Structure formats: structure tokens, C-alpha cells
Image (cartoon, rainbow, N blue to C red; front, side, top):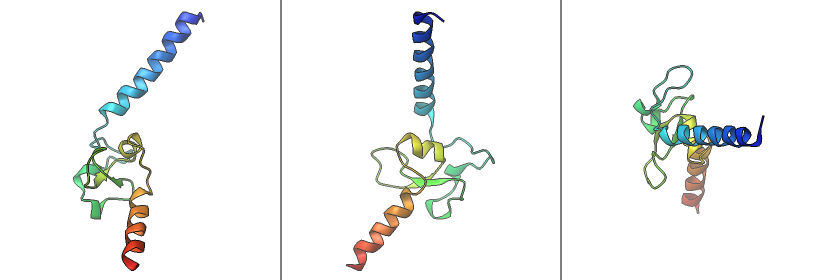
Length: 91
């Protein structure tokens, strides 16, 4: 494969990954077809993740794991935040 074709293939892959991350809106379905955004944060199923619905939001909602990961938030984020709040309230 020529250098130009290789560079073009790499750019295409990066653009595809970026585009897919940008269009993720949290309403996509998990492999078990659970629509995570239909649940409240308090009733979020195990297959979904509680995280903010946008990077500047102060609220939390039930989202897909992929959506939360696209914002740099992992599946344990909500539990960690709750533990920290409990620790602060005990002081």
C-alpha cells in the first residue's frame, strides 16, 4: 500500500471514530436493546451508566456506557461520586 493510501486510510479511520463519538446522544441501544435514556438515574439498569447528559451539565441521567465513555466517564463514576459525597457529609 502506498504512503498516500495508508495516510488516507488512517485519516478515514480517525474521522469515522470521531464522527461516531460526536453523534452519540445517549439514546442508542445496548446489545440487549435497553433504551437507557428512558430510565431515571435512580432506576438506571445495570447495562446502562449514570453520568451527566453533557460535558457542562450539572444534572445526571441514565445513558449508555458508550455515551458516557465518549465524555471520559467510566461505569464507576456515579458510585465514586456518591462515596465522596457520603464521606464529605460524615465530616
